[in-house]
Length: 105
Image (cartoon, rainbow, N blue to C red; front, side, top):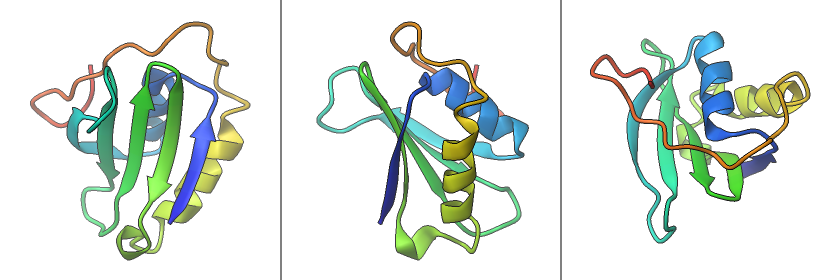
C-alpha cells in the first residue's frame, strides 16, 4: 500500500487531479473520522484507482496495490512532488462533493 500526506487542502488536491485528467468516481464520508471525506479518482477509460482522503487536519493519497492499474502509484508520486506548486494550506479543508457528472464542485 502506497500512502503519502499532502500539505494542501482537499479542494486543491482535487483541482490538481482534475487538471491531470482524473475524474471523481465516488465520494463519501471517511469512515470513523468526524468531518472526513474520501474520494476515488480514476481515468475514465483505464483501470486503477487513486484514493484521496481528508480530515479537518490531514489530506493524503493512497494506492492499494491491486488497484494501481499501472498508473496510480506514479500519479500519487507526481502529485506529491507537485504539491510544492500548489498553494500551501492556509486554512482547514472544506467539504467537496461530486457533481452529477462526477466532477467536484
